[in-house]
Image (cartoon, rainbow over all chains, first blue to last red; front, side, top):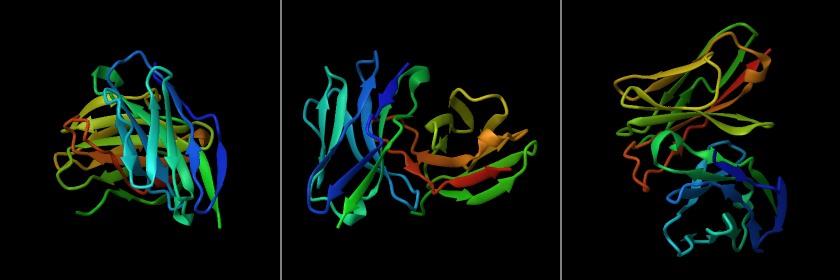
Length: 116
Length: 115
């Protein structure tokens, strides 16, 4: 079974600084997709960034980038120039599109606070 | 386009009762997934519906059921409520093509409290 592990329950970052959120996963599949979702205090979950496992190049979206290490099954999120609006819960998630395992599997999440 | 809507937003029930939650996906989206979010267990997948058919199911007891209508709106039902069913129930809408570009768009959730 696929599992996603986020070992840090909470992190804090100074405004304008950079922070890295860690995530590891376990799977026997070769073709899958990894995601970071953000859930602000208002609770509406939104997609931050997506990475296809077959792509070697790390995904980037403005201030958000990932460090995808397929062999190590590691998928960390880097937030540059942190802003107050980045304060939220962040979930790492995994998905494959084959068969019965085609569902999003989430990690436990990490609460990120941003200090002004 | 309007986003994913879920009704009601808040619900208080007592043990033994049943409850029905509703989700209206984004227009044109044919797939709806449901998740249960609790502080202890995090986000857990309940089920996925596509074109009125259940396409995938998580590891929840039979008290949890769902369905999808021809207009893609979905409902989930929990019978014989237990205290442990207190959670935020999230619905996610997606086109349903299962292409990698498919993105799940989440609703605001329904907060269920069981007393």
